[in-house]
Amino acid sequence: MELYVFLFMLAALVSSENKVVHEDFNLMGCSDTEKEYMFGLDGEELYHADFIKEVAVATLPDFSDPIGYPGFYEQGLTNMQVCKANLAVAIKAYKNPQEKMDKPQTSIYAEEDVQLNVENTLICHVSGFFPPPVRVSWTKNNEALKEDSLSQYRTNDDGTYNIFSSLPFTPDEGDIYSCTVNHVALDQPQTKTWEVDVAVPGVGPAVFCGVGLSLGLLGVAAGTFFLIKGNNCN
Image 1: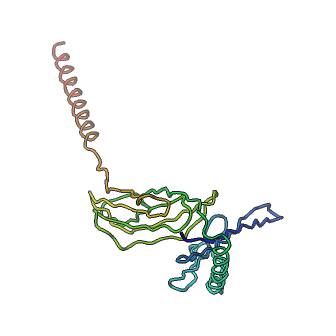
Image 2: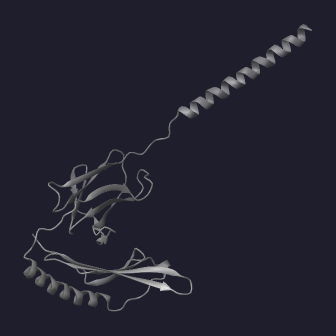
Image 3: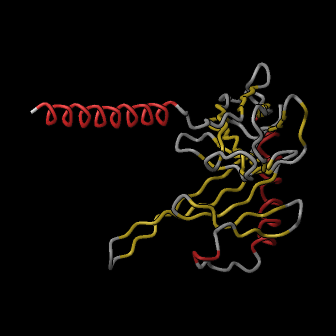
């Protein structure tokens, strides 16, 4: 079993003027196959190092006026070397002890209200697992899909992790999507399904309103007829 080294650091910064507390966090982790380096503030990710594309990625939107961080990717590379060295020491010292493992919990949902033939995004949220990594795959009508996007690992308060996989799609009535999660703590892959099922407005209320209006008009006409007849009799 692989041994993972993850360091999670929190620093509370307090403004003496307004008494506002902020939490600044840094996540650094590595294994034989995985690398993770991320900075965040108040539960929001600021930057992470993309070790595949070899760039630093700022994740806050432009309107938030995000701060710059020159040299972030290079710092991530340096810290991965430190993490690898710590991993080698840990493997030698602890001889790969049995890890405590937590099974992931998976949910799947659409990012926006679903409308037929309108582009949307499916989100597969995997949470409560330890250790990383997890593998996420998608299918549409039982056919494997290759297009998906996986977020960075994020920590929960209990020390477990969560991650999001997103899939752009265009809803078509009757399509069935599934998200399958593989993790070392699972006896078999965990799969959640989601079906395109857009409710069509019913005709019942309109029919009832139409019938009610017709009966009302008929009642008025009948009343007028008998009123005229009564006056003629007088």
